[in-house]
Length: 366
Image (tube, rainbow, N blue to C red; front, side, top):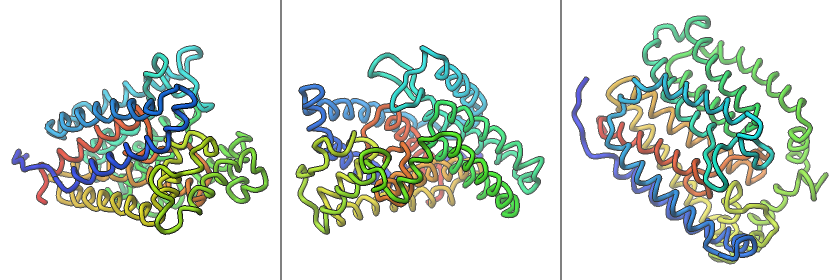
């Protein structure tokens, strides 16, 4: 394998840092009222976000200088460790419960979410497996079943927490990688029908998921219950208009929209910066996707190409789900907006993942 290195994709790096800066500004704007009320410190969430962003940026630059094929030899170990963490988090009294999901490990405010680690570990594992078994991918038994089996096992363990949002991102990313490497469309159609039946079963098995579906179709049916978040999010976006109400001038962040600095930060951004501000952010993400796809197309080997596709697909799917939820296009699920939403392990691991992508760009032909 050629070991010729170039500079990383500086355009991608600038886009990442630009989104991160916008995120810092919006985290403070969205959280100041909540932070003052709960902690008597309007900068509480911003200070924590700055800490994790600093940690993530350091990790991103460090990872950016580690040759990406190093992760190929670590793929199996990464997945095994993540499976162990997913088991540990389900042990009563060990896993921390937040937002109705037992998906955290740690002490107090400093904790990690094993499912976030699994997303990246699965991308690395599939990139290795698919690059080594591309000739079998058109075979249902030899290609598709082995690759999807481990994905669905991880998805099942994540759903035991439960965390549908993270599980959906992982499965969606995996499907994109398998499709890109050459799997047959007929196999996907068949599995898609099975998946729809399974998804319907997941919804029926949990009453709160049924409420989320019905509230998505008609949030006013239960405006103070299951439809509350969607209604308050739309109340934020609507008044924003074209130019917005002005930075810091949101009304919905004053205890109307729950935890506005996390899953619904895009609603506050649209309220304060308007349609134009929202479009600018989405365009920045679109440019990130464009650079990621270019890096994947120009990677030196199939492993690097699939790794890049997996990382950029994970970001794209997460953005589409988050913005879809905030704008009322899809039912509510707990997914943060990459680089913008307040978060610890999710923000740090996103920057680590993008560090891997930047390293691939150093070895690509762009």
